[in-house]
Image 1 (spheres, one colour):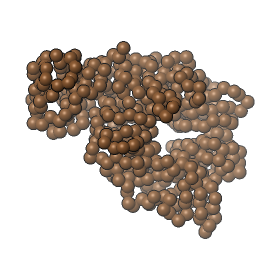
Image 2 (cartoon, rainbow, N blue to C red):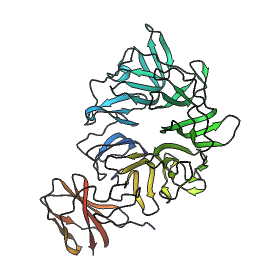
Image 3 (cartoon, helix red, strand yellow):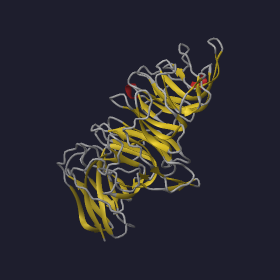
Image 4 (cartoon, helix red, strand yellow):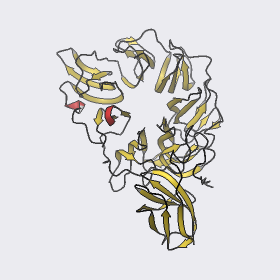
Length: 476
């Protein structure tokens, strides 16, 4: 039984409750790999998803704050991975093997070349990337360099690029005996690294290791992980490090999905090591993909799991600062499963704060249950109320939305008595499914109801993609 929670303008919500007014409309398919909330409330999304009127899967698009598609932004496949905002509205995005820089409208920045167009670089296996303040890029993975002048020939795993996309010939590129998939800059400029390798520049390393800002191995930091990978890092104020993924220590058989490391790389014995399950599948092990630390020290983790220490937690869980599972939030069943390309998908990749204090979750899921609202219509990306955000999203509620007649049959006249700029009406049923979506011009609209089944519906008014108010409509 789906419980759809009807909210009223100005009503404060509990932190991290689902915002049922935000929904990815008319899309489905595989996953959202990255979201980037923008200052104006819009949201960039990247991954593999359907887009209205486009054939095949798309990699990049922009949403209004309501979740509706922003048709002024041309969807494309220039990237489908991690999005990093940069200067003057430009942003970087990972493709399958390299990184591109795009203009605010989603087109490619002509001042940053395709990396493979440079004379010394050929991409092979994509990994992670980091953007420096001046626009230079450090990229991991496994790639071929052909810079015989400076002696860089063969496969390299940490490769620097200038802010124009060319191989940075002033840097020392670094190699290992495998592939580096994940990198994360620490506050002091060093980088945590993880991947499938056993040696870095001829020196044995664990599955998590650290390098200096110039890429040289930091021998003061050593871990004893001999199997698996880290997929997420978070350096804390006391220099301890949270690491998430799937890892196994030397001489032990237990797989660890979240650990806290001491500044020297030792596992912190004071941190609780939770057990994780992914009970819906036998083909993949559970893993943690995202870590976000709240101001009070609480830890929000996301990933591929449905139980944490025996408690139901579908892809997202709140832990206290010592790693113990909390019941303060995310105590529902979390994200729901769906089948795609013969496998069951059910995971949340990241928990992303937005400028207005709300949060976005995204990944590969159908439906989301936070313990208060169970909305089966959620798809791939959802918005959660934040610590200081209510339904109004900062908009004063001076106007009145009127629907007449109500109950209605065939059609209804909708009016709003305050001036707005670009308004839309959304009629949704008790399960949150959209049955009508149309523009509203000049404060009035004739809402066509032919073919709409009898029942109670929710009518929402949006202005420039922002939620304004709502009303109940009974269709006879």
